[in-house]
Length: 125
Image (cartoon, rainbow, N blue to C red; front, side, top):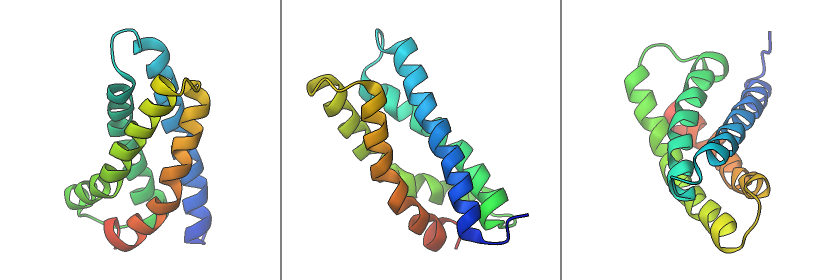
């Protein structure tokens, strides 16, 4: 359907971004009275990374087997970004008083650029 890997990556990444953004915002709206912004960001990321991994594996990079090994690598690629993102989100929302909507958009920009290369040359190598 889409023979170009980069086009598939952009389409899948767009979906993953929308999913991850929505997850953080919904969790924040529902749970911010009982959980910290940092915790909400981490929990949301764990779920979003799993969804993202499946989409990239099946649709973009089309690798066979190695599910567990590639899943671990995927979490490694996103792990550092997740912690950095959670810290930035906490600073933006809790200390600089940006809205969760704006803050999540800023944080997404931090993650998107590096994730393609991490997956291309490490996760799904």
